[in-house]
Amino acid sequence: MALITDIGVDGGGVSHPRFKHKWAITFQNIAGDEEPLRTNAINASRPKMQFEEVVLDRYNSKVYVAGKHVFETIDIQFEDDINGGVTSALQEQLELQQNIIGLNASPRLASAAAGQDYKFAVRMDLLEGSTAIVETWVIEGCFIQNIDYENVDYTTSETLKVTITLRFDHARQNINPDNVSGKATGGAGSTDEGFIL
Image 1 (cartoon, rainbow, N blue to C red):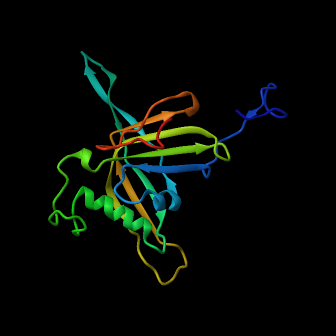
Image 2: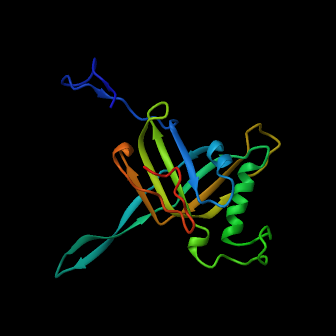
Image 3: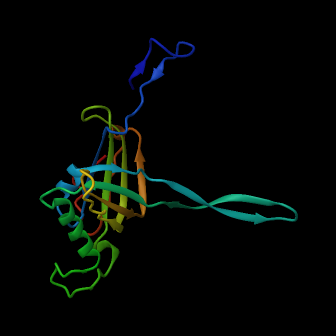
């Protein structure tokens, strides 16, 4: 890894940091067109995990051990493009989860029979500066839990954003993707193309 060697403590040098803006995101097995989501994403939260604590009560004290791990939801924000690519892709995914407005042939308000019918995967790559990947998160078993289309406002020139909150089953972090093999799983009929680590 890049190391700044002409400064530092005890001659050890200073490691070069990773930057927040050097990242890329891709979607697999999502219902809509993945391209506008990939190119219009502007920020995303990385997975957060915590362990449930199990309390063991004893005579006059308590002892704690780790229980099951739980992943928190993550948010991904997009700029809402003028051609409607982002909103169209998200609408198709929402319709797959539950046919709210009747885009699909099934009756309105009909929902998917099983999670494998609508779940997808997300891959988030942290980049070195060009195409070299220094870290990869593969987030599996995703569905849209919440969507925020944001308010409109005559008093500002800001772009409109769309923010989705994803609930997911599992996340895998690969610090050095070049030395790790594995695939993301998004649901039935998944081909895992582009998700080989």
